[in-house]
Each structure stands twice: as C-alpha cells, then as structure tokens.
Image 1 (cartoon, helix red, strand yellow):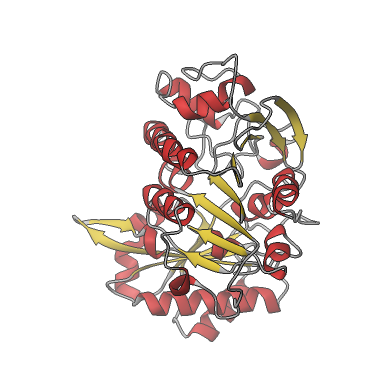
Image 2: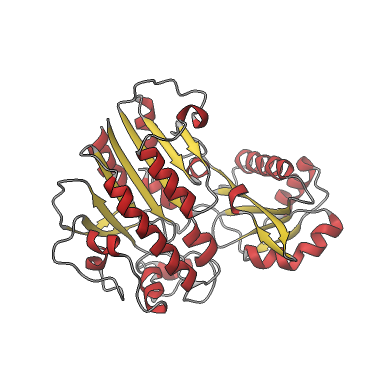
Length: 391
C-alpha cells in the first residue's frame, strides 16, 4: 500500500511575499530566519540534510553538498495568511476570494443573532485581540457576567473563549456550532469559528490546547476528497479534521501538543493506531489502496509565534527534527514524506498576527533524485506531488 505523509509545521514561513504590505506585514518578516538568528542557530540535523539550509541562508542550518531530499520554496496563490487558506491550498483547493476579516469587531446584527440563538446573555470584547491577553483582561468580567469572550484577529476567525470550570466545555462547543451555522446561513464568509477553552492554573488564565476545536467552512474538491472517494485512507492528525470540516477525512485524532502529534504520526506509520476507534462512520473500506497521513503541528504557531516567543519556537522546531529520524527509519519504498508550512507568524516583528510569507517544501522518499525545486507557484504543488505518488 502506497502512503504519503505530509507534516505541516504551522506558521514556519521563510520570507515575506511581494504583497505582504497588503496584509499589514513588513517586507522584513521571515519567521524561520529570525527564529534561527534569535537562537544563534538551531540544531536540526535532519532538516539540514534534507536541504532546508540550501533554500536560503539560515543561521546554524548549513548548506549541504548532497541533500537527501528535494527542496524548494512555495508561493501562495490565494489571498490570505491564515491556517485554513494555507491548508486548503496545500490540499489542492485555492479559495477564489479572500475570507472576510473584522478589524473593528463583528457587526451588531451578527452579535445580536449569536446572543439570541445561544441564549448566552451577551458577549465580552468583540474586537481583534491576542487570545492570551484578552482572557487575562476579561476573566473577572467573564466570571461576573457569565458572558463568553468573543474576539477576532487579523485572520478570518470568530473566536469564543470561556473558563470551562465555569461554563462547561460542551456548552462552549454548542455555542461554536451555533456560530458556524449563523455565519454560513448569513454568508458572512468567515473561515473558522474557534473554541478557546481555558482554566485558571496557578492563579492565571491558561488556554487548554487539547480541547481547542476549529469549526471551518467546507472546502471543495481537495486531494483528500479524491483519495477518500477511491477507497483510500485519509488520517488527520491534530487539527486537520477541523480545518477541513471533516471533508475528505476517513480517520481523525486530535492532539494536545506537537510531541503527541509526532508520536501519533509514527504510530500511524507503524500501523499501531486503533483505526476502528478513530474511523468515521461513513468509512467502510477494509482494504484501502493507499493511505494519506496528514499532520498539523500547531505549537510553533499557537504557543510561540503568536506569543512572540522566538526561543520557544526554536525549541519546537528542534523537537520536530528529533522525530524525523524515526519517521524516516519507518518509511518503506512505498512511502513519501513532505514537510512544509501554511503561512508565517514571525515572533520577531511587531504584532502577534500571522505574516504573509513563502513556505519551505521538502520532499523525500527512498531513492529520490535530490535537487533544488526553486520557487513553485502555489501551495497546491503538495497536492500535485501527493496525487502523482498515490493515484
């Protein structure tokens, strides 16, 4: 059985795209370059030998004479710099128009409908904000009123935060589901509703990553759909299931950390996952012709990029690199490995939002002809490579 393993290092961009100013980003943004510089280089021997340092000069990531993979840069076609836009294009679907954003908060008519249909009584915030900052700022008022904290960002997101020791997690999920239906029925063109649960830990509001959920719009005609329709497996690890609103997925498992996501990827490769436990009810194939393991590693973005933590970002990349040895060791002649990113989130420039950047592309299988791919137009080159390998 042929397999493709695609690992998305969330937000590991490698330089500003020409239109970055249209997205309120500076031409100097370069997530990986700045993370390397801040940390005086990174210890990533596997990414190095795959050719990451051959793409451009990254401090501490050497250029190698004989890389083991094909390496290059991808330029996004879609007009966006968010997770959904990036992942959908990786999977072969480029959005025809940008998602809506709300720099001044959500319109009152939308807020009123949300409050009425959820019976939540009211909302707090309703403005673009850093998630960690807004829950610290409004936690006391949240506990006083019982109102959810609803906020957005530079991305097309409707985010709902609650203390789940105060308001049950199930209620938060129900509110998010209602918001998704309102946004779809009203044609608001909002990419994602995000459940942002938190708890008070050591006296401080702290987000609970493992319970986060994303409620996305549904993409059309991705490589995931094609593989599933032909009887193949599509195993989503991390928030993949949410990003694609379950479309094209046959099996899914959420993660609480990059480490867990990498270990689950390894388990999937070793056929140690309990697939019956994580299978969708509509998946009935007992003898799949191919398997697509699609993993999102979100810590780089959520824990470090958005929090301007370049040190933590660097350590996260180094942790990912340590898992590439067992991942490549587990590969057979029938396996393809692709490592890429979905956008940038430079922790060393002003602001806490995503940045409009090129992303790296590393492609490996046993016996591959190592070469430079140059700059490829479209993240959908990943879908093309996966299709050529599997279909």
